[in-house]
Image 1 (cartoon, helix red, strand yellow):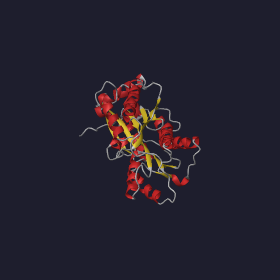
Image 2: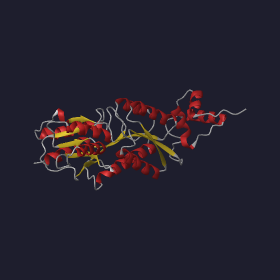
Image 3: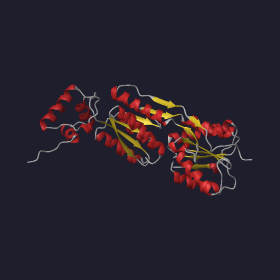
Image 4: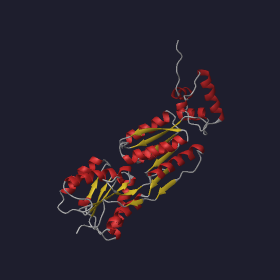
Length: 337
């Protein structure tokens, strides 16, 4: 008769403990009493269970996995950031498994649960947005780092750009070029980055006594095709702004493509500035003026925070805020005469 193949879930049910407790006991991680650790080890010996190396996360083992959850891997900023994080984790002998949530909260919650069930070493989330995700993260025993986002009531580690300052500097750059009618293409309404960039833009407009017209405000989902769609609404305006602050490079590229097809010139007829500084932004035929988030430094810092937690689970969480940098190229210029 074939012997039953036990899983960590089976062991947890048999001993009436959580899968996380079984995982910590088998990996030698803290948080499990000596008595319970011995009980779990004895039961595993009895059933002949040997943990797969893919399910182990202690620092003295060779193969360790970090779950990296992001909204859309097709976005070059996120794919570049994921590449950087994976590179630095690999240097420390950690593997990275990328999960694409399509910005759906339910998907993100499922992926967090999956990382727990399979006993991953840790969690990193790049595009988390909802308070429910923050609560879920605070309830998990896994080490976690929030990247490029901050969530209400989230108490764990995070690294992000000063998005208020980024929005302020983007608007200020246009104001210094003489623009007074400045529009804003925002992101999803529950994204901390989008909210803070809009607040920075609004503050700059207020400081220079400039009005914000509701006609000049649009919402985007960070996709190129959405930028193209918004360009059609822009073209139909009777009175147009002379400059646009756009929530990210991908949306701005779609927007610029759409207005150019309609015969408008950038920056002669309209200046456009955005955020991220994705790799293609500096190409000769693009030359996008943008606010850099320093993806390399952000990814490296996120990995350092994760490694610190893995080596010291009791370390105090940190929030690291990075300074944005204006990259002045050729999609912004003086106000048209």
